[in-house]
Length: 269
Image (cartoon, rainbow, N blue to C red; front, side):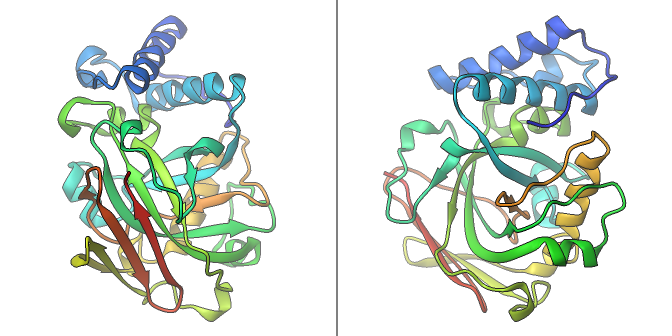
């Protein structure tokens, strides 16, 4: 789990209460009024503390951190969500689904889906000070991936504080089976198409993700490095959506195809 952040305006008790409210929303399927409304003095630091408290509860119950996701990395996503900066969340073991495994729709409150490039690491990345060259050396391979994002906040009416507190609006991750060496793909120019039930609904390129998904990996390593936390070998890093997020519902079949990397399909059962 990521290290504990200091600072912020909220007390430890308030952080725990906010985290508990989000955890309850997972269980009962009822979204919350925006935390930024309930706790108007909450800062980004407070939001990450709320996120970390949830991760602490999950891992104490037997789940395990298996990576991180970068959210709001593209202009399309920032415009869609009304925010102006990227964020990050934790990926736990229970969030990963196979392509051939129907994903239970009951797990989500208001799901949307995004096409992404996933990094699998072979070496640790410890920021601050991580460079593009460092990031390249640490990557074992890349995979086409889909992320189901979800919000425990009513009607996706979120600020940056709300989405960070809500584990960067993470829902589930589906990884493709075709591993590609980093040297064999130009992540910046890689074209992506997103098909919903056979119809292409979004297109994008790797350049949409902070100029290149590698830039997103560097941003993440340096951001969590300020907390004394490293990205670990074997962990998955979801680099951020190459397109806008698309709402999905039970029975939908979604395929992302990324040039030079193959495709990945998710089915919401």
